Length: 67
Image (cartoon, rainbow, N blue to C red):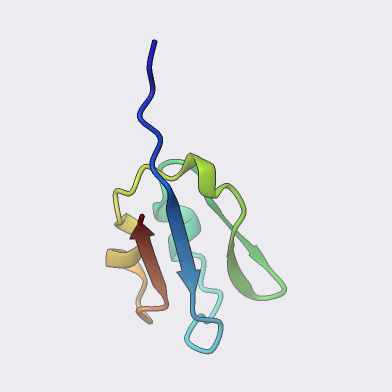
């Protein structure tokens, strides 16, 4: 079985991120964790580029880039 691999880059603007956890709750793949009060994408390889985190982040701190 072939799997199409996408190169995904996730940028979290640490100045904007408040650590609210919306991205953690929204992401269906469990990509994010809150560490030291900020969102950290810890499983970028699991990202399916649904962009729910971008859409739901109240601070607009997350950017998902598909390369």
